[in-house]
Image (cartoon, rainbow, N blue to C red; front, side, top):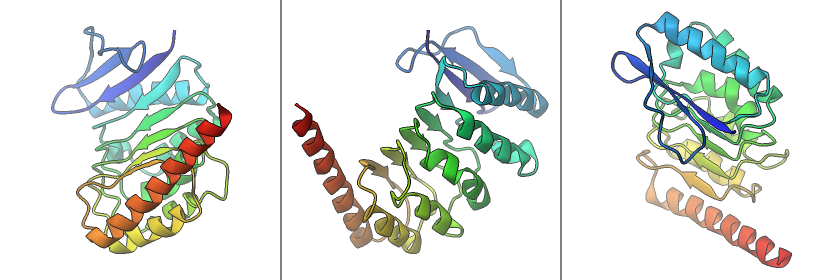
Length: 212
């Protein structure tokens, strides 16, 4: 049986949900986490599952967990190392986790150049333009990656960062979904990105047709 692990922190207390597959509703038996130390304990358990390549864990969702409260960079270093060792995860959601650019720098390689992760959601964080260059470099498609879908909604990404994304997409022909909703990016720059994504989608459809 494959599973999805979700750690949810919204209000108090936080909830831990366990689901048997991506499309099933969360189980109604919920473990209540009433304090940050308990959340840290649950995160440690989750990291162990990731590091140990738990074959039942395909979808890792840490949405709304205040990861910035985990102390220094060591947590993000451990998460990055765990992702690097993992060969079964396909989806990672770090939506609204209070991530900033320095966290993104630590996780960029592990998320964007992973051999099995096809979808990454980093929306509603504080990524901004500062420190975005390293992230964009990982998207250039020069190294093997399974990533086809990336969500960067609500991240204070401005035109300079969007320009880096355009540059990356000129050589990345695999990414077929890039969401940038509610970022202060000029319409012309968004149009450039949309056009490049459309080209990638057409390329993907052509490859599928050739296989038939």
